[in-house]
Length: 85
Image (cartoon, rainbow, N blue to C red; front, side, top):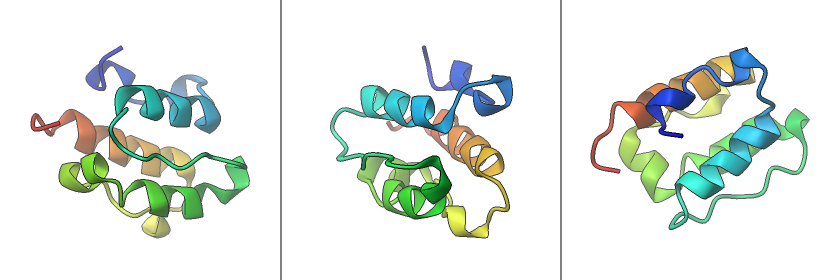
């Protein structure tokens, strides 16, 4: 699955836990933190966006988003629009 094809996965029924696992597979050279609880999505996301691939893509901090779905969508858009990954 390409990152462009993965857009809006959470809105299509994918759990955040599964999306996090997909990011580990898609970015094996990054040290992606383990998502321990979906309730802690903001702190997990804040760590995720500090990883090199996500930082280079311009993934936004989750702290400015009301829901995890909106944040994941913004991350997916950043990743899909960055051809340097």
